[in-house]
Length: 211
Image (cartoon, rainbow, N blue to C red):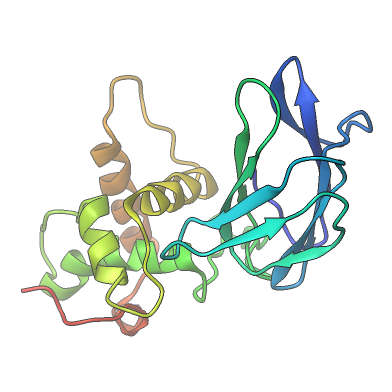
């Protein structure tokens, strides 16, 4: 679930599974995106909710029953509910203020150069930018290792999530039978073709330059 600044959604159980939306019958809790963080309310009377930072190293926030408006500073999170049958978790992507931009006149979506997903894209494009030739596109594990050289580690699953988000944002749809590697290569091709990522962006990624 993507939650732009200012949006609010409810969540609860329908048919034994978690549902998220505007349905007033969803009474387990509420999420509201506010500026550079988001707020979570536990409307239940039993069961603590756990919000995990998927981009961090084990950070989490507990939201106890009856708590309202608990600030969550994570951009990409997994919300796990401790009660209920069937699936009991969902993912929240709450970009920083202004990170969801309107398309420009040429029809190419603008990207937030201060976002984590943009760092992932720069890492994918790094070999091509440095070698000015055909180079292998980094794997999610390599991107994770590259970005985890900074103070904010990024797991492989989070990298894949950002890749999927970028593909959706840029309108990339993989034909049937194509692998995730195809998606990464296509992302890099589009980003370099339209100058969405340029050499000056290499300074946004931490750590030593890969050999």
